[in-house]
Length: 520
Image (cartoon, rainbow, N blue to C red; front, side):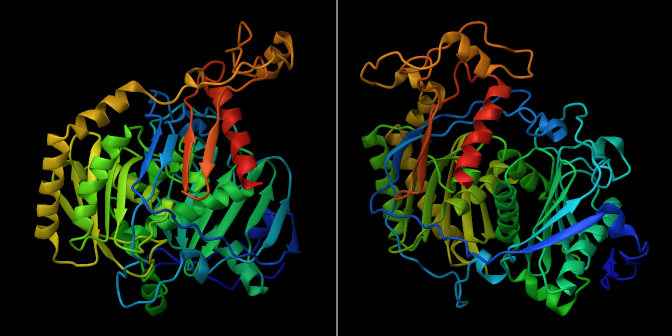
């Protein structure tokens, strides 16, 4: 195997060569087989419709041990933080432009070739990463007290890394990025080795582990997982992480690497670890991360129309997008004429706001980038929390519109209070989401597997086993849970998990099935 002629750097004065050990790559992958596949462009998702956002869905469900797979990630699937059901939706819109720069999509600039690399080696581990589980951890927490020599780090079931094309670490889900510099250099060496041969690496299989690579110009994103998730699912998660980075920095960060290959961008992402950790945590509960659709808070039609009307008034005064949200659920969304907001942008924007404590303490006016709208340009977002769960986002192309947007917010808040809309929002949260038992259906003949067979189907390795058969709508083989996605509206609706799917093991199985069906 030819040596890799790339290098990595920790800073401008310290060089780290991935080839300091000529067997570094070969020891990790005893055999590499390359299969060429045609390149396929990713479909673009765009919102549609002419009215105001209108729909309903489940309020969040929170559990104390929600992210048991930070140490056991995805070993236990958390209770779904509730999708729910839209009736009719969307917004008026104009495409607007954030800058003179032409619009380009994230995935158009540097899509990786469909070259699949499958590593064949013994069952030991990938670079010491074990698929056994350590003790449980705190949801969304970024742990900096670990490195690749730590037993706890090796026992993590799912890792995410961001690094530069010089091998400089930018972000790691677990551990101190700089302590993982040698590991980052190894990942960079694998990518460079294939690129030097005229190929692009997208997948390496090593024992039970999948190593998924996404190359975005000078930015490399890597996921190492032993959770048996589909490749497309892991790749989609890396794409969202890249999108979150672009939301903060814009794609123009590439020019900094062109000027200086040793450029260190970690200082630009300072204080954003919680943002990335929150996004990664959402992969284990939020259907929006793989459906590429958003979900709406259940409200009465008249209530939503009243909220949409006041948002439309401010949109007509020069606001590009006006978005009223409750946690991760949309209450109403309005855009300038012909403007279109991608569901992924809504997901990343709400994650950025919800995971940044500074937004909760005072009104904020921050530059942000919508990667699906224009990854090369900054917009400016006015963000204000109306109560502990409900917040307003006003987006504009003008950098000096703070006082205008502040006046718009005061107008909106006044109407929302006088109309008792905020009270209705809180009531909707307390009421909970859609339950299968609440659905009105015609009686169906009881057919399907026997109760004994149902019990066998539901049995898992978990000590929690159903003691009696649960009958869904239509009998033992009936409906227990569903997710529906409207392609036209870019929205989804889902029921809450209930018996027999109200334990983590069953939800994990249900999630895996839905994810594989979606990617299939």
